[in-house]
Amino acid sequence: MLKLRKNSNGGFITPMTDKVTGEKIDFGYVIIEELRNKISLTNDSKTSVRTALITGDIKSLGDTIDRFAKNGGEIPGRIQIIEMPENELPAKLIRSNIYRNFDPDGRLEDSKHDSELWNRIRTKSFKRALSLTEDELDAGLQELILKVGDNPIVMIKRVDESDSLADILCEHDNHEEVYKAKKLLMEYRETVSNTTPELPGGDKEMNKNKNKNKNKTKVTE
Image (cartoon, rainbow, N blue to C red; front, side, top):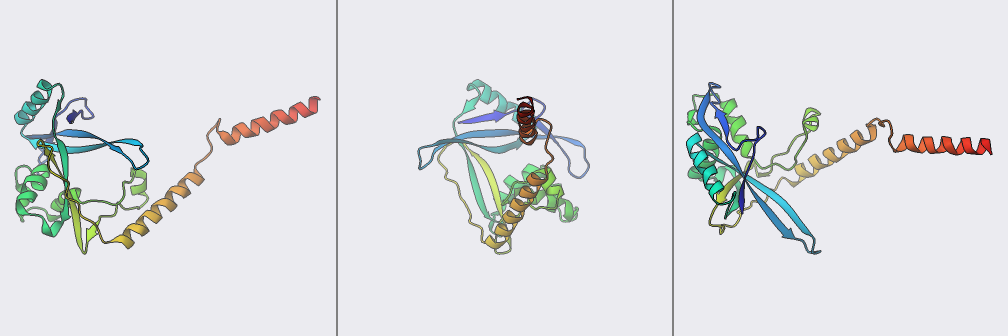
C-alpha cells in the first residue's frame, strides 16, 4: 500500500522554485512512501520504507492528496525501482523522471544554460554506494557513485498503482573503488569514536567513582 508522507512543515505539498531565476513556480512535489515487510531466511521480520516523488502543478498535487484522503489515506500499489547506466536511459524516461523532477519548465534542457547547474541536477539521480552524514562529507569522504564502466548508474523510482511491475536493477562493476571507499569510511568512524570525549556521568567516570567508594570503605574499616 502507498501512503503520503508529510514534509518538514507538516504539510504534504512542497513547492519548488525556478532553478535559474530563483522565483517560486506553480510546481511542486509530494512524497509517496511504501512500507515493505520482508521475512529473512532466519524467519526474522524486517520493515523497510521506500519513497518516491510525485511532481506536478500545485492543483494536480492537491487532487492527489484528496484522492488519498477519500481512500482512508492509502491507495493500492508499489514503488518500482529502475536502474540502468546513464548512457542506456531512453529519452522518454529522462524527460519524464529526471528533467521533470528537477527542471519542470524545461529551461535546463537548453544547452545554452549553465552546464554546471545542470550537472548538479542530473547527478541527484545517480546511485551511490554510501550514505554519509554532513560531518563525514565535510571531512572529505565521498558518497561514491556506482558505475558500469565509465557510466554512472541512474536510479529512478516510479509509482506503480497496478502493483505488478518488477524492479529493474543494475549491477555495478567499480568494485575496487567501492571497497576502498567503504574502508576509508570505517576507518574514519573508528577514529571518531575513539577520539570522542567522555561525557560527565559516562561509563569511565562511573567506574572511577566505584573505585573511589571502594577505597573509602577500606579506609574506614
